[in-house]
Length: 165
Image (tube, rainbow, N blue to C red; front, side):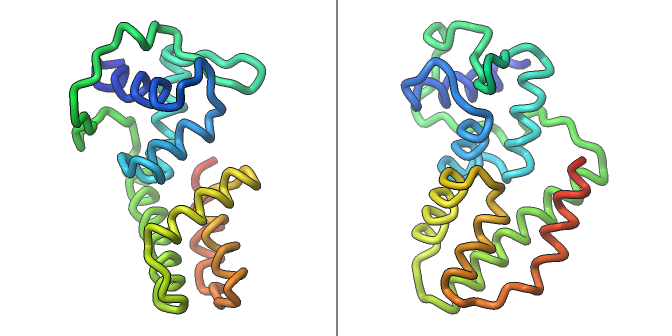
């Protein structure tokens, strides 16, 4: 893992104030809270960190295998766009599709309710944490709570999850 990836992990753990986090807490922070990655990219980042032994798993919790307190995080740090997330060409297409599906659902909720997009993102994150589900599914549930017909997105969301496996 290159230094930037260590900085990203250290940032997330230091920000949380915890020594261990659920995988979902890490990728939700990276995607929805910080907006550094799409949901799919954040999942891949966490998977790679585990695969490369920068995170270890203990009773469904992830712990860094390095001392996060020794990692210096530059002021105003944001990861570079080229952060090494290994993807195949088909996965890259899925990343764009997944991100755009979520953003389209958010746009529909925004247009139908007039709520600010930041507020919608927050509700999606809360629903995700509450039900331990993916952001796209949480967005569909939020839309349904507002009686918004989002059937047009079911196939795209389903396709996204079956392509992930």
